[in-house]
Image (cartoon, rainbow, N blue to C red; front, side):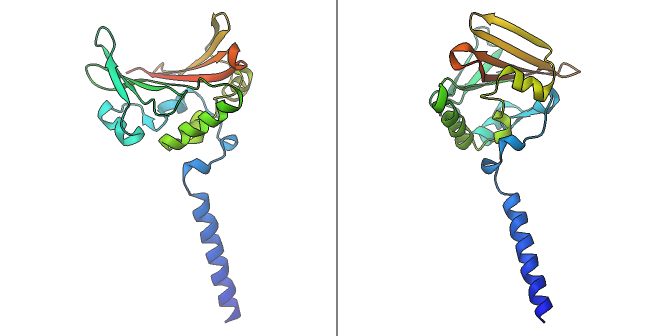
Length: 192
């Protein structure tokens, strides 16, 4: 009988460890994220390639507003619920497919990490989606490899971007000198 008790205790311990390993995304260590390529951005911030705008509220909750671009070819949904972290989703004005996801952290230094965590918490995001926020271009390149494009946009602003082999996805990371040349915005664009 003592052997049975030990087995039972062992099984309970294993079950507890297994359940804690499967708990929510918010405790996931972004330093343990897998290496990625542009092809892995088929889902970003919980939004999936091919998703229509009517499904956005299931993933991100209610938007804080929106508007058509001047020619009505796209509609922009704003999810600006976290101060200093604009998040917008651009959808096709005709077929309502998500085309672009844009997120930016506008804060500096210690507030940057606090704002990053606040947006992860607000939208229940996978921390791995925002792991590149706060990294330098060289750190991102060490993970994703040489970019398809690397350029200076204007004084103090640079970007690197990656394309999938079939050009269905473009991922762009932007760096501002005023924020210490760390990645503070990510734009994912899907082509259909």
